[in-house]
Image 1 (tube, one colour):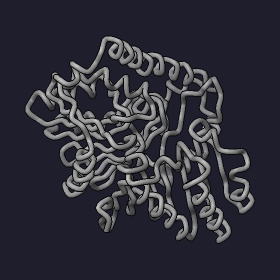
Image 2 (cartoon, rainbow, N blue to C red):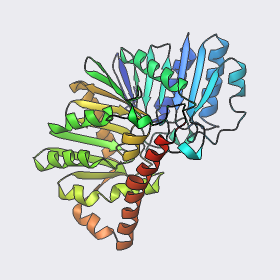
Image 3 (tube, one colour):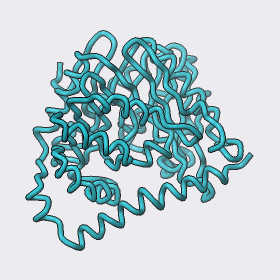
Amino acid sequence: MSSDVIQTGEYTWLNTGNEAFPAMLAAIEGARHSVALETYIFKAGAPGDRFREALVRSCRRGVRVRVLLDGLGSHSLPASFWDSLQEAGGQVRYFNPLSLERLGIRDHRKLLVCDNEVAFVGGFNIAPEYEGDGVHSGWHDVGLRLKGPLVPQLAASFDEMFERAEFRHKRFVLLRKSNARRAIQGAGEQLLLSGPARGGSPIKAALRRDLAAARSVRIMVAYFLPTWRLRRHLFRVARSGGRVQLLLAGKSDVRVSQLAGQSLYGRFLRAGVEIYEYQPQILHAKLLIIDDAVYVGSANLDHRSLNINYELMLRFERPGMAREASELFEQALQHSKPVTRESWRSSVSFWQRLKQHWAYLILVRLDSYIARWQWRALPD
């Protein structure tokens, strides 16, 4: 078995696009009743064409096939791309088709469910940049193939998102709670769903509970801009003798997000938090290990994922799984560069600090303000 894969009877860790995409395609090819595919970005070419062909073959076998794409993330797809799938009987919907009135409300989830028996979650979009080993080629990401009681719940969450694809929320969505924001509890596992609605994010609530008593925290995310309450929890862990390690992007596809996250480096380093930046490729993973709790899914640790986007995360509380996730963290750490207080202070110019400050204001203040205004502007 490849060193990129850690497998048990219920789940398989997928640490590269080279592992994730063949496993997803095999599940589609083996489906007998239903396939539900949801992603933020879907691009033509490899591997997107292979996914479309597999979905078409599933339709022709009599399988019910539904595809949900985000209207912004997948806007580059040609209008005719899905003709063959729709002619075979498949359904394709775009979540929140582009509109200036609600441009910021996005479906950032990544999910594949086949026959309500096997599911895939993680950070992998269906796009060429995710193919590779994450070191020599392709972005570095993390995913999970799983079976068990969470799979039907993941399928049900897809059904809800597929039905709300046209974004027909009631006016003043902030004044009511939404089914898109909830936690589904099982034995040692949770499905955490978040979206724009009244009420606290289940993802933030679970993180705060785990961090309140944490002694070991390992975070590997593409975009890092946590809320002040989460920052306070992380500072407390480090200052009280615990260990906090942040593995962040040394190369990023969203430069403004990287700058905004770097604006916080000084404060974290002074609190005793360890910071590393992944070097070989763009880091796109979303993996958090807090003592024996493991989080994996689509959400970054930033304001957009925690407060604005539709996201899903799985939380497991299993010591064995935490050890396996830490192995993946260690593998990535081998390709990362530590950021120290001395090196950071000497390498950041006044101009760089100014750019970081403005990036922070854009993502924390302006983006949140626009999103809240758009929530209130949603049609009846």
